[in-house]
Image (cartoon, rainbow, N blue to C red):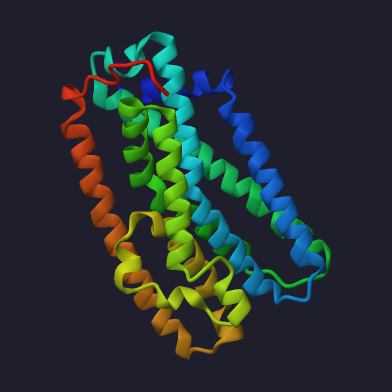
Amino acid sequence: MMTFIRALRSEVVKLRRSSLVALHVVLAVILGGCAGAYFAVSAWDTLLGTDAFFQLLGAGAPLLAGLACGLSADAEHEAGRFANVLGVPCRRAALAAKVTSLLMLGFGAALIAMTLFLCIVAAAGCATPPVGACVMAALGIVVGSAALYVVLFWIAMRFGRNASIAVGALGFIAATALFGGLANGLVTGTLSGQFAVGIAALIPFAWPSRLSSLAIELSIAPSLAGDAAIGALWAALNVVGVACAVGTVFVFACYFCGANRFEGRRGGGE
C-alpha cells in the first residue's frame, strides 16, 4: 500500500535526476547574488532593501511555481502519461507527495537566495534584519505558495506546461501590481506591508509576497517606524494569514476530493 512517506521518497529520487534542482539553484544564486551586490554598494537603506528583496522573492513565487509544476508535469507525462501519480493505488498520497516535493524545492531556493543576499550585504558592513525573521519570511513564501502549487500542477497536468507557466507569469504581474510596484516601500521609505488589507489579502498570487514582507517588516518596524506601526503590521498579518489559511485548506480539499476522478491530459500538447 502506497503511503505519503513512500511517495515522497519516490519524488526525492526523481528529483536527483531532474533538471529542476539545477534550475532552482541557478535562479536562487543569480537573484540572491545580484540583489545582495546591488544593495551592498547602493545608498538605499538595507533594512528596507531586504524587505524589497523578499517582496521580489514572494512575487516571483507564482512564476517559479508555474515553471516547476509545468516541467514536472511534462516529465510525468513523458514517463508514462501520469501513471506514476494517477495510476497508483493511492492517488491522494502520490499527488500530495508531488506538491510537497515541489514546495521543498521552492523553500530550498528561497533559503539559498536569502543566505547569499544576507552574506553579501553583511560583508559590506550594512545592517540586516535578524536571521530568524528572514527564515520566517522564507517560510511565509512557502506557506503562501502552497495553494498555488496545487492549482498550477493541476493546470499543468490538464492543459500542459505552457498554460502553467502563463498563469504563473500572470501571478507575478498581479503580485507586483498589488504592492504598487516592486520596491514600493523602499522608494517611499514606508513599511508597505501594513497596507496588505482589502482585495490584496484575498488574491492568492499576493500571499507569498505579503507574508514574507510582513515577517521582515515586523522585525524592522521598531527601529524604522516605532511601535505605532507594529499594531498595523500585526493586523495586516492576521488578515492575510486567515485568508491564506482558509483558501489553502479549501484548495487542498478540492484537490484531494477530485483526485480519483481526474484523468489527466488527453492530448500531447504543451
